[in-house]
Length: 355
Image 1 (cartoon, rainbow, N blue to C red):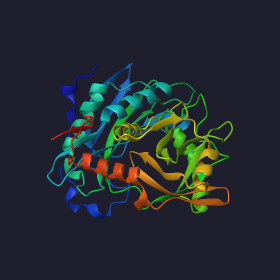
Image 2: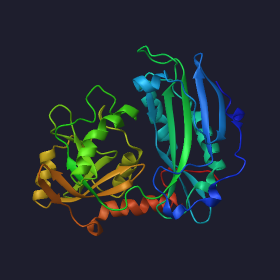
Image 3: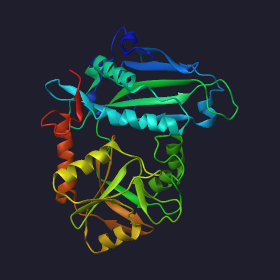
Image 4: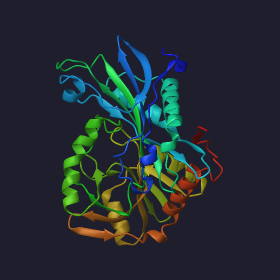
């Protein structure tokens, strides 16, 4: 076991942060000064290091390139105008990444070491955390196979990285979604509940087709009957029907989202009835036709709360209520910003302050 006090730190000679225009960031294209890296070989994790952000060297025969043994996470750090900064529920992301690692036959990262690496990296690069209202420092941990071998088996060596990227809002306007009744994001018994890289590769083509039709995301349905709603693009999905909050129940085809879990807890705190269950497409279509669908939104780390403007089923497009009339999702959006900027009491101890 690696001692968390022995992380080797090599600082960059000169930071690029002073040249940054934080008001005009394109999501996922700007990276901070440092990254964490650690190798797994001989059955154990080796030296842990924080280095200047840099390119990696890898063999053409590295297992990840050929067989896709890779999992990642997404989390964020936030800072307010007074300089206070911290992480939102990192323990949940750490636990979920290790769950993904087990499913993909990769070694788990010790939780205390993961948290220490994350904390030190964000503290070192805290000047990269934007302070604007909807801005944050996106954090990307990733674990992948690096065996120099092209036989089909689980790798024996792995690389674990954490790097960060300052970002503004993921969506700048409400999204248009289309119900997907042909392609499948995840099948029962598969890896849908894990943040496996391959899950996202398989979703790109149907998403591209939807984009060509003018939609921002897909509303994925089950792989067997395409009858039940599962997720929306890269987010969990929520509906408010007749005053109740409805969301698909978790299973091995649906990601256990940290924002999803937080939304459910807050809704219960605020006295809103929550139903986690199988939701038929027809139930939502009927609710829209009868004007009983009050709100629909996606929730996830990148977007936090993403209002859904329209839902399309084939050639039929349903317009949802105006965003300004949506009580719950607007309240959630405001609460999450206020919490992450340290403006409200943290009743659930979700923020880990790092100052």
